[in-house]
Image (cartoon, rainbow, N blue to C red; front, side):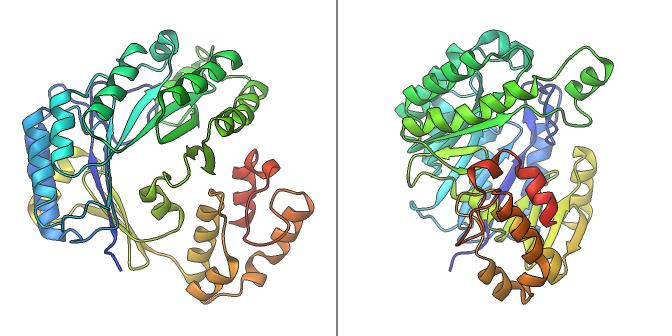
Amino acid sequence: MRDPSLYVHIPFCETKCPYCDFNSFAVAGRDVDGYLDALSRECDARGLPRDPATIFIGGGTPTVVEPRQLERYLAGLLRDVRPDASREFTVEANPGSLTAEKVGILRSFGVNRLSIGAQSFFDRHLRTLGRVHGAAQIEEAYGLARDGGIEQVNLDFIFAVPGLTVREWVETLARAAALGPDHLSCYALIFEPGTEFFARRAAGSMRPADERVELAMFRLTERVLRRRGYLRYEISNFARPGRECRHNLVYWRNESYLGVGAGAHSHLGGERLANERNLARYAASVRERGDAIVMRERLSAEGAAREAVVLGLRTAEGVDLDRVARRYGIDVERLFGATVRRMRQGRFVEPSGNLRLARRGWRVADEVMAALV
């Protein structure tokens, strides 16, 4: 059996997008090398898994740093990791931050999957989203990845952007599929607390998309992509058969992973941990004690079981309740029986087999999961 998966957080971006609530910061004026020093210290002190099931470097934009810095942190991270060409090794990138030189560095260290934040094929919607790349750069970045030997490519897109029409969204999906990526992630725009978009909505200067338009886009996403060979395997994620993101499945199956970097989370030995988000405090904490953990939580067996069900329901495969009962030693009928029966009567979950969302249930997934929690 392989070791826990590994997540590495590189928190720098060209600019901070107004809708983004991830732990990320505009790179200009930041001490990137100082952050990489702290990251290296944390990795040494905590000990990275030698044979991780998957590796995922996210952010931020991990490819926004200079080539020497990219090479530096990859060399440090992989110093003690056992080479394995079969391991899924993903790095996030944005159009505009990717160059042939950087793709060559990534490939030389065994990266075999790139996740590119495309977001839209329309320049006016990219401007609304605060993106610094243009639509033409999406195809350029995709071509660089393929020409550089990256085996798998994911493209991220956002729907329900104010001003985006249903016709434009269908065109976006068709253009994305025509490129031939292995995987597509399609997310509805969310006005997250603490973001610029949230403040704009509160001030009345930005209005969310009409709920009916958002629902139409949600429904059409599966219909359009299925015709082009992409199957939904999670609420917002679609892949060609066999090209699902293994790392994200680790999260949704409630499996173990180690997260390093500012704001990174871990799930190890039944315990959830979170690192300090502030860059200066993260670096100081690592320097003083070797880690920057600011939160530890060990769920009860019942709490862990509920979490496993909620996470698993995000996926098309659903949840094997008998397996949950064995894994956590709990009575699933007592915990979930009455709620599941109500859900089945309302046709929100499949009538038999694994507990899975029915087509109607995908549209109200948050409400279904809240009822189970």
